[in-house]
Amino acid sequence: MSPIKVLIVDDHPVFRQGLCDVLETDEDITVIGEAADGEIALDIVHQNPPDVILMDINLPTINGLQVTRQITTQYPHIKVITITGYDDAEQVFHAIRSGASAYCPKDITPQALVNVVRHVYRGKYVVEDKVMNQEEILTWLNQHISRYGGQHAANGDEVFIPLSPREMEILELVTRGSSNKEIAYKLGISHQTVKNHMTAILRKLRVEDRTQAAVYALGHGWVRLEHPRD
Image 1: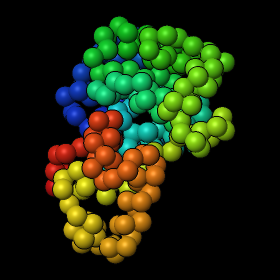
Image 2: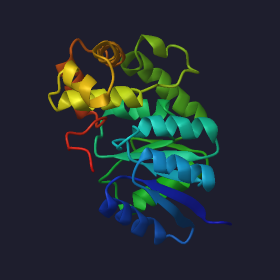
Image 3: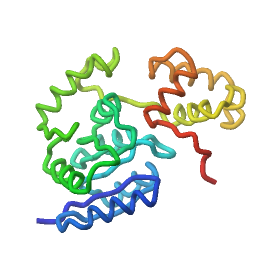
């Protein structure tokens, strides 16, 4: 049997190396590439599609959930395992709705991670340490839709859509205390365009103001407080 081809997507080089070291100890798994952000990951996938992707959610440029949705829509055979330091029930739901086959916290043990890779490669789903088939994961999703899916999630075929890249960019600036006027200047867009994006952000996150939106996004690992790299 050919080895399972894995792509690692995470912006922290030390963590990427750690994942690579863990996976390469298994003779049935080979790491074919690494990516520090979503755009690089998409390029690699287009050129050399892997079997399984380990995907961090909190990525620069493009949110990991957005990347997952793009990849699983274009390449249904590719399995995505989201792996993140933000381990909460709502994040799990949104990851699976975005097309991921599994959700793992970053403190997962090496052997457990290898097992998850094997399970998803064989078409299984892994959530909260439970291995499920397609029928079971659909049941699990239906059980959580009313709590986390919002009013637009009633259609089982609809995939959860996180904030757009521009909305993520604006929300990240909001978390740094930038006003709408300052955001407009930094991004080279009109003040009204910023206001329109903020209205969309509040609606999507189902919060009442920009402070609640920033707290929500930070708490779920969607944006980060660090200054962007040069």
